[in-house]
Length: 196
Image (cartoon, rainbow, N blue to C red; front, side):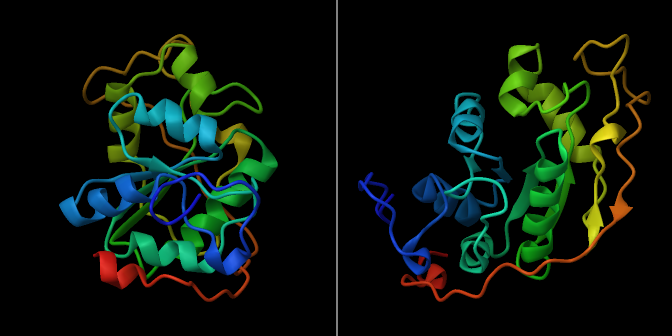
């Protein structure tokens, strides 16, 4: 995708890549709205259909480039992990890359998410914007190097995706220490500061 939001066939060089749905991300950051980082365009579009601002990186899991973080400077960012090892590793690496850049960073495993499931699966099973807001609000802030474990996904109620009554929110996933991996160095072609 080009910086102006147009789709351009072929893969641009890494230093010219931008986060998915960049125009919406820029507006959200300016307005102080939260931005959700999902794992893939399908999930970002599913979240956008709920009226949320969502983005992702190109080329799949583990491909967050260092310069993507600059577009989220000062933002409140919620990173939704897919429920598998690559998904939680990716969410942790993205969260690490945003520490010191974004105003707030939280990585999240959704309650009741099936093994290898993603936010689109969660929404299809009955998850909604209100439930997502509750989970995001109550997730702990990210600490560098902390990784969630797929087996830590809490179930809400009797395996449903209905929000728990106030004061009875499900236990959140317990983070696990993992290796810190730095995204590959890259130099952006565009200056994100010019858009903030």
